Image (tube, rainbow, N blue to C red; front, side):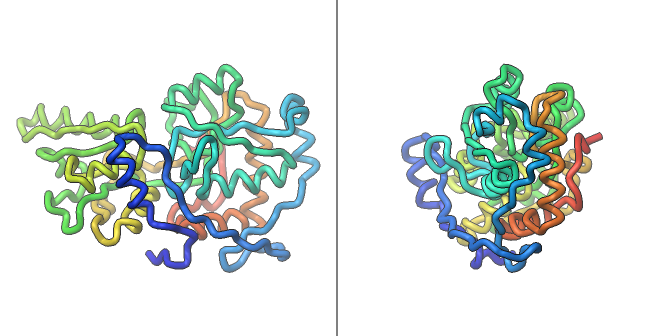
Amino acid sequence: MTTNTKPRKSIWKALSVVAALAVVAGCTVDESKVNSSDTDKNTGGEIQKQEVNEELRNQLPEDILEAGSITSVNTGSFPPYTIVDGENKVTGASADLAEALGQMLDVQIKHKTIDGLASVLTGMEAGRYDLSIGPTGDFPERQEQATFIDWVQEYVVFAVPKGNPHEIDGLDTTCGTKVAVQAGGSAEAVIKEQASKCESDGKEKLEVQSYKDQPSAILSVQSGRADAFFSSRAPLTYFVNESDGKLELVGTESQNGFDDLYQGIMVPKDSELTDVILECLKELHENGTYDAIMDKWDLDGNKLDTPGINLAK
C-alpha cells in the first residue's frame, strides 16, 4: 500500500519519547491542508467544504442548537482514524469526518479524550457527551447500551516484527507467544479466550499484555516485550507503514475469532441524533466526501457501500 502521497509524518520519534517517559501524551501527524473542491464529486483525494443542510440541521435537539456544538468523545489515539494531537485536539479520518458533519449541520464538533470505553458509555448515558465518532466496534451486546451508525468494515489481524520470527499466521498459532492488545476492546476478549484454550489443550502459555492505547501496544512489539499486536487492520496498517520496514502484518487470511466486523459512530440509545447523523453520512457518500476521506487515510479496504444502523448481528 503506497502512502507517500498521504498527509503523514513518522510517529516513531514521538513514540520513542513516549517509551522513555512511559506515558503516551499523543501521537502527531503532519496533516497537510487539503484544498476544497468546487465540484459536486470529490476527486484526487480533495475534501470539499459541505453546504449546510437546513432540513437536517432543524432536526437537531434544541440543546445542541442552542449550544451550537456537539461533543464527540474518544479514548485516545487510534490511527489513522483518531490521532490525539494535544489536549482534546485530534486529527485523522474521524476528525475529517467530524469536520464535514459539522459543516453540514452548521455546528462545531468538539473533541474530548478520556480513558476507556466504559467511561465513554457512562458519560454518554449521563449526557456529558453527545456521541463518539470513533469508529467503535459494533457488537450485538454493545447495542444494548448504545446505538451504532456504522461507516467502516474492519478485520482483526496481527502486527509482528519483520520476518515473523514466531511464525504467527492466525489465532490458533499464538500459543507460546506474548501478544499485546488494547485493554477493554473486543480483541482483548478474543485473545484471552485463546489463552484459556492454549492452557486447556496443554499447549505452551499464551501471555496477554493489555495496554491502554494503540501506541503503547505497538511499542511493546517494537521493543521486544511482546511478539505481536492483535488489533484492527486499519490502525495496524498505519503502524506498519510508519515502521520503516521493521513490522509486517500477518494472519490476514484468517477470521481470527471474528465474523463480519462493523465499526461506527456511537450515540446513546434512542438518541435524537441517530437519524440525523445517518442521513448526513448518506449525503457524504453520495457527494464523494466519504470516499475522499477514506482514500486520504489509506482506508480504501475499509469502506462500506452505505452506512447503516446496528449492522452487527
